[in-house]
Image 1 (cartoon, rainbow, N blue to C red):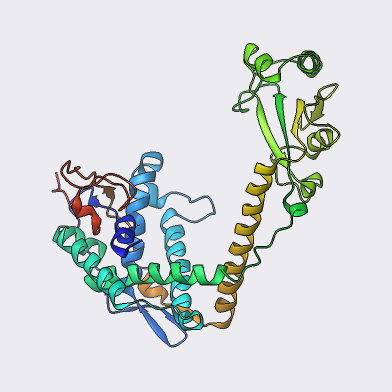
Image 2: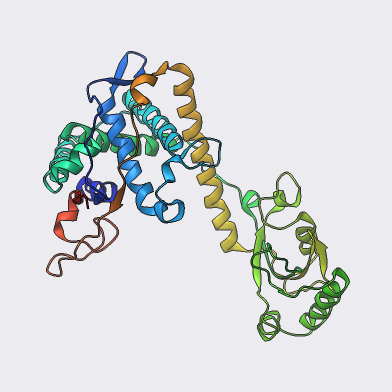
Length: 372
């Protein structure tokens, strides 16, 4: 994928919800020091403001205009939570950049030209007030794009070292269908059986359904009774409480484990305050096994990446300039700008994942609106 397409994905178009007073951050001040490298407030603040664009656009409807002072769920405000997230990302990016030579990772002249062109286009397409509020200088935008590109290349190199050999036994999966009978209460959410009944009546209902299912078609019977048939795939490790990665109780899996292909349990299985009618679909589900194989590989790759990054963190000195970093805030609110589609332009969605006009190929547009 050419970098201009990557840049289009990364740099969304946005606008200020009202005229802002501009960026009061000192771009040249030091935000954080990594060993002997100083990382500027300009880069750190732009990355934080750009993240705020995404949050304002997608979460403002849920949290309201007081979003940034709201509790993030961990005892901190949304502002502090996002700023912590940005600091973690900065550390990750600059550590990978510092170790890029270890993996023979670099950016070509062509890639750097594309990065600079994307940054130039971003600035050209956006209003001066919005650019100032975000702290979006050519250098800051280009640096963010460079860091993202380095991180992508480094991750690819690091995860290539992960063990991708997964035995058939390790990824073997069995798949069964089931109907869940659970008494509904006010906070229960979706349930397969929506009757508010006693436990005894619920068991009777489940057992009667089970009896009929053994002599008929589970799906047809469920449909006629307006029940939901769900599926579950599991492996041998899921049969233990500690290893169970499914959403079902181990008791349900143990009951399924006793069934042959096409066989239905003789009576409903009780577990987790519910009853389950189970039919074994396949004791050797090849498709589910392949999905599990890829899941295991992905998990190993993620672990390899995390272990490598943690090793870098443990060996480095990372010092945040708290006085400067405290000046970053998200008082100016943003919304994603909806771009007008140019029907004469190429409408293949490979640039940004959506149909856009030709200007979106570079970066997207940030504008501000006049105050009322």
